[in-house]
Length: 156
Image 1: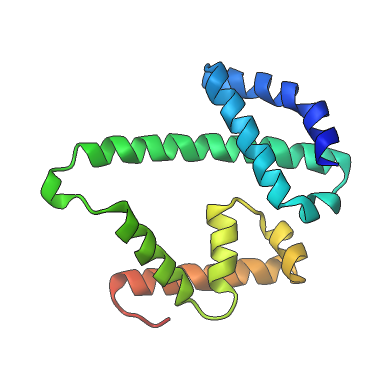
Image 2 (image 1 turned 90 degrees about the horizontal axis):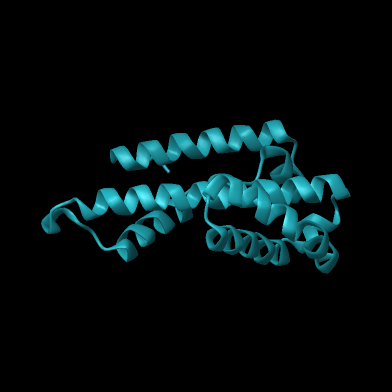
């Protein structure tokens, strides 16, 4: 199935991505990354129609492009910070992992999949066997718990 998707949509995705980025090599990288992500989400994709698979690929490429833009902005901002204010990215990643791990139940997993991986509430609902409204409710609680933890209230 993935090989067929690759044959059908690779060229189309690269052309579309190049219209966004203006850079052929970045476009190819983004499309390759999307197909690598498709490999790890093969079970999800098999349950989708052809049109939904195509939409998933487009959304994945777009999200990866937006992530690159955000990271580039963050790196530019971080480079302008004085050395004394910079933190190691490893420590930041560990801090966030600990925060997400401290969330009760499925909140941490749902939060990471929604906001870091780009899944929708409906997709998460299918993955976890929950109604989309319940997923949104759990995400709302996760955001509240994270906000409290970041304020130092630690109600998690």
